[in-house]
Image (cartoon, rainbow, N blue to C red; front, top):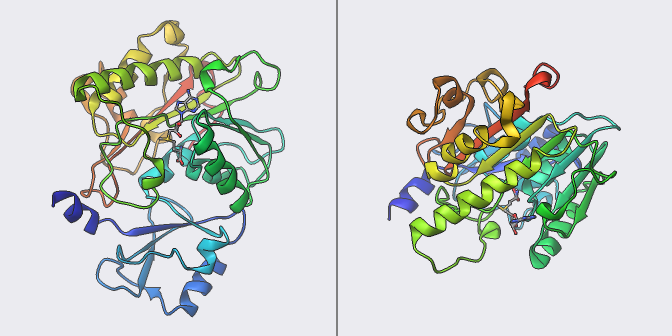
Length: 317
Ligand code: SAM
């Protein structure tokens, strides 16, 4: 099974949850369990620090951590490396006045990551329209000690961008439903699986892409938003570069109101960038991040970041 082979090259990623602990404390805990620094793909007792994502540790793919007290108490979160990219690229401020939306939040891995990057300051509105998944989100946020998160059981598309609660929001994370075609391994993603419909694959992808575009355009209507990260765990260009191209050509982007953040703000050292053939310019392709399942030691993933044209120098990564 090709999927299994690719999964075997993906380490078990552990994100240390800085809302509840520190990397030093986690490393001491793992040392007490007999782990030491080394190559996690060669030894079951080795771990390494990730080179792109702060607070992320790599272990052998065969280790589960489900019974680990740090997992059970929310101090560590099992989250694929690529799925840590969106919050990192959104780069919200850790400040009391910070206002951020996670538009499609359950089960809440990226919500808790954003909360940690905000150092539990400001407010993070976490929308989830599905009631059952919303229950999971609330549990996850509480377990992870994210005190700045306000979970809201609503459809993001019904939120009025001019509502006084949200009108000052500056950062929005959009990780909407997608085909999930990039996922080759387990656990953190099993939770993300959503209901499938029974249309053909092409029809399904077209419907998803249309929905994803509507979500981006809605996010662009928030009057103070200056940074929007759109991500998927899909490998299909129609849900990735195709959606970006349509968003850039939409009325919401008219007169260059939003553009893609340049490569130096979007994981500049990550080598795999967007697929040029779908886009209008090589610069746009360089602005985008792709992860190829297995090949990049991650699941398949896509990350993009829109910035309001006049404010590109304000918030940088
Ligand atoms: N960001 C999540 C994480 O990292 O844990 C995963 C999000 S999952 C890919 C997409 C979620 O968006 C699903 O839980 C789905 O129910 C929710 N969703 C889809 N459309 C929505 C909408 N219009 N408003 C709010 N939530 C929505």
